[in-house]
Amino acid sequence: MLTFNTKKMKNLKYILGIVVMLIFTSCDDYLDIEPKGQVILAKVEEYNNIFNDVNFLHGQYFIGPESQVTDEYWPFNEQNIIDNTRPVETANFLWDESADRVSNQLTDFFYDFAYQRISRYNIILQEVLDAKGNDADKKEVFAKAKVLRAFNHFMLVNTYATHYDASTAASDKGVFLVKEFDLEQALVQSTVQEAYDFILEDINAAIPDLLDVTLNPMHPNKAFGYALLAKVNLFMKNFPAALEAANQSLAFNDVIFDMVAWHNLGSPSFPVQKNPAVEFDTPENLYYTGGQWGRPSGLVGQVAIDRFGMGDIRLDDFYAVPWWIPNPNFMLWFNNDYKHNTGGIKTTEVLLMKAECLARADDVAGAMSIVNALRVKRILPLNYVDLTAANSTEAVELVIEERARELVNTQNRFWDMRRLNTETAFAKTYTRDFNSQTYSIAPDSHIFIMPFAKTATDRNESLQQNTK
Image (tube, rainbow, N blue to C red; front, side, top):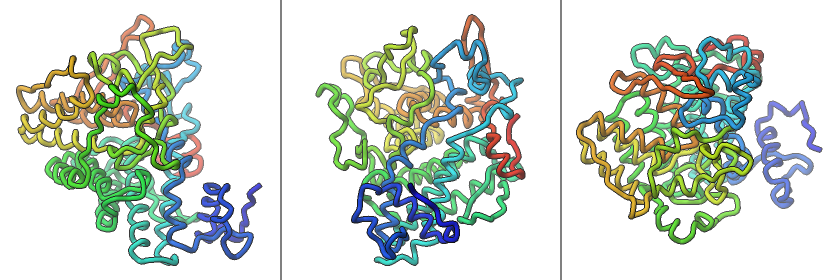
């Protein structure tokens, strides 16, 4: 049984050493660190090994209640919605603005785990430069911690605060920005603008020291750094900056895995595992988290299924009909041969960000060329037809639809619905039929903002809700 020495809890090397002990409990040689009986990180490679924590990165990136709001979701048990036995799921799924989600959202693992990861990265940032080892290695570990701190803050502000609007971001309430590891610090809730400023500051500071190629996709590289920079600017509607960053990312990695060829081989384990610490090691992954643990707590609804046409390998090989579900019209994320990157970023997302930016700049042909280059490696030749767009608006809509297919089972559908609802050209009222009734959600609905759980507000009384 692991016991904590409370006298040492402010020793960051000791705290992070405990983390390492939990990761490498089977590696006796690794834990043979002086002084005997303690786990204190001293070498830069020991800090670097923390990024290989499979359970921490994969098990904690599952998709939470935000998936229930999307048009992808369908509940495992419809009766739970009818009987309202799960009030938060019912409110999210039926888009019920009158429901009290705040009082009923007692815990939120996604929120808690994001801040746990941020705390871990802060400890690394405060300690690794004093570790034993090569200065270049220390700078790289420092940069990885910094870019992942930015990534986690980005996910938080885009889940629990209103979407970025340049005209109101300076006054819109955001989230806590945790900039250091200090058990006694008084946290102050940021504005949305302050959150984005801090995220951009971390990313730009990290990119120069990120490596072109890293040990495995659990270690962020330069392509990921630029991809995250592109994503942040895309969400800020700074499309020229997003395009520039996407191009910089793609200069390092623009691979599209050929799923058609993979399917034609009989869909073997995809692809061959190169490293037992990485469950799904494909060159598309710029940063990989999630796996089979990342799937949402429900099924994929008919609306999402209908987005996939005949011969689309993503439908054929991502999903299977669960034997215990009586309704065959809904499918679960079920194929464990394909361990989806539910929480990271892939090259295909960067390509689609570039396509969207080109479409918004009226380069319709360039945008559709990228979309079709992806689709031809996702759809069987017998069924494949190039997509065409008549104008910029139509091209953007086709890119968004392709994002919904390619990035299914990630937070991106929730985020896309939010960000597009802030634009007159793309805002829409969504409808859903359930139990012989039709439900709808307006573009400005507060349901698109997740509430802070009671555990979070109890721990921090200064934390103010951004939703109802």
